[in-house]
Length: 117
Image (tube, rainbow, N blue to C red):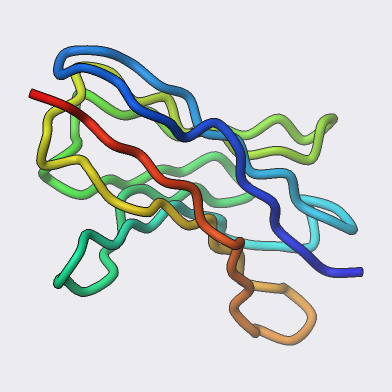
């Protein structure tokens, strides 16, 4: 079964940290690239960070130097380490993967991140 399952969201004070995880099945190697998107209330979904199978990363300007995307192929998991969180980071965060065989996009169910001021 092809699916992406996020975990790790929650409530944190401004300046704090959270780490999101995205478990990919059947295998992280069946997706390229993988990424994290977010959607705040009343706003469009936006790319936060993306990582390729070769480890190349790119970030939205708003999160550069604060967020880090990484992958653990052995655990078939992609992570988003979020530091120095700001209230404007509050959103539902979604894991995304482009299936190599079909080029179809897959999405996780989303995890809420709330940053209080």
